[in-house]
Image (tube, rainbow, N blue to C red; front, side, top):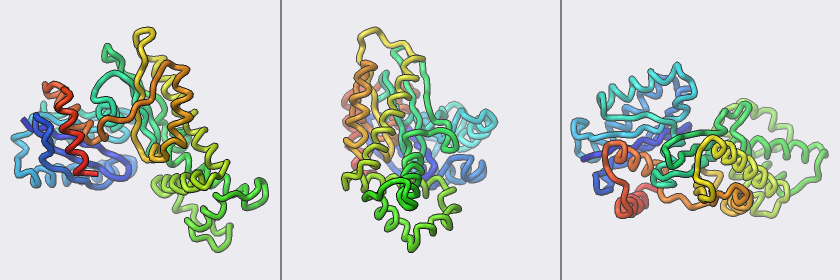
Length: 323
């Protein structure tokens, strides 16, 4: 039995094939698969290229596929897109061999091994997803960078530039982040930032500045440190909203896991988030698997397989070869 997992995103899309025992048969990545970024033709090309590459690597044919899970960015948010995305996937793998979902579901399936709890994503965007013991699901955040996605890399980048501008013109005293931003953007004059407006209209470019915020936090910059505390508060609110929609038994600690580049800031964001979650009887736990391995695991479960500890260990070993 062969299972395909797909973890889509605004930057790249990952594809992996596993056996029923959790053996990694093939892995590849292609470009972005968000229809708002590349259009439906672009999505079709990205997904088609990935499927062909991963099956070619494994020396398998599509007829040998048992089931697949496709975690697609933005899936379910624009109802006009849903039938089009479903049709693309159906054309690739055939009727009855797939299930499409939002990419946050791949994150949940990986971090919590398909068990009840809440998963937070803080990459270019931000979103939360939860599932209770009865199988009821809920989501929070994920409204897009224009008026949402608080706590995301894009949000951090935008807030960092706000601080830089205030420090440049004297509304705030200069701190380490000021010079870090100047160097990272190659600014000769601070006002040269204005000439980069078109660059920062691109989500990925703004999100990359989250790394500069992290560097400033490492340098002890109080403003940058506070940005990560504020991001933690936003993620706490997402968890709170999700739990209000779900039914966990009273007194049952709810596991909350995470994925996405923002969480690579480590304790700068994890510590304040951990502290806030205690009020919800929720506990922050390290992710068991990456989203791409989660997509594979979910495909196996949806295809009739059983999630066991040994299978999870095999997938953990497999993902060390694709990181």
